[in-house]
Length: 354
Image 1 (cartoon, helix red, strand yellow):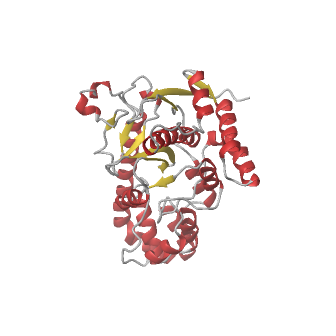
Image 2 (image 1 turned 90 degrees about the vertical axis):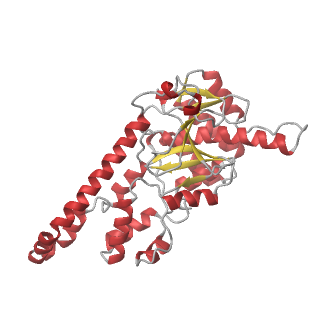
C-alpha cells in the first residue's frame, strides 16, 4: 500500500455554484493523474450546467463523477494515492466504452501515472498519436487531449513534407537519427526555436479545434494540466500549485502568449485578480514563476550556443575535413535533441510543476 498523498483544494469556479474539490501538485511526477481527476470533475460541472440550460425543470443529469467527488470531499485536506487509483478504476469499469482488453490495460497502468506518462504528440494536429497508452487512457475517461506545440504546415521549406509525412514527435526524432539533409537541419532548428513547446500557430489550432466552455487535458513542457476554453476564445489553466492552496481566489491562470508575459491570474468566475486589487495576495517565488525563469534561462543558453556555433563553424568544417569518421558524432553532440530514442521518451515522460 502506497503512503503517497495529495493535497485537496475546494474551488467555486466560473458560473457554477457548487464547490468542486481538485487535487494539487506538490512534487514532480504525478501530474497526469491529477490532470485526469481535475478535468473529469470540471467536465462534470459543465455537463450538469448544460443539462439545466437545455432541459429546464427536468431532473439533473446523473453525475458520473459523484463517487470521485464524494471521496475527495470526505477526505478533507489530503487523500491517499491508492484511494484515488481505486476510485478511478471503479469509474472506468462503470463508464468507459473501452473493450475489455483495453480497459484492463488502462486500469493496470493507473498506479504508474504517479511516475508520469509517455505521450507522442502530433506536431500538426495538436493532438497525440492514436497508438499507445496515452490515447487509450484519455479515450477511456472520455477526455479531450490537446497541446499547442504545432508547426505551420506550409512554410515553403523542404521540411514541410517531412512534418506532413511523420507528424508525431517520436517519428520526427526517428527521422532525425537517420537523416542529415537540409530538411533535417530545418527541423532541428524549428524544435530548438520552439523548445518551450508552444507556438502562436499552436494557439490558433487549439482555438479552432476546441469548442467554447470545454475543459481538456493540456500538455506543455512535459507537464499535464487542466485547460478551460472560455466563450471569449481565451484559454485558462487550472492552478494546481500547492503554493496557492491557502489562496482561495486563485483558480485560473490565462494562457495568452508563448512567453507568459501577458498572462494573468483569475478568480473562479474568471475575474482578473489585478482588477480586484488582490495582487498582494499572490504567493512569492511560486513554482510557476520559477519554471518561467528556467525556461527563459534555457532560451538564453540556446541563443548563446547558436551564436557560438556561428563563430566556430569554420574551425568545425576544418576538423570534419581532417576527421571524416567523426562527422556524425560531432553533429550528434552539437544538437541536444539528437539523443537516443529511449532518452527522448524519458524526457516526454518526466513532469515539472507549473
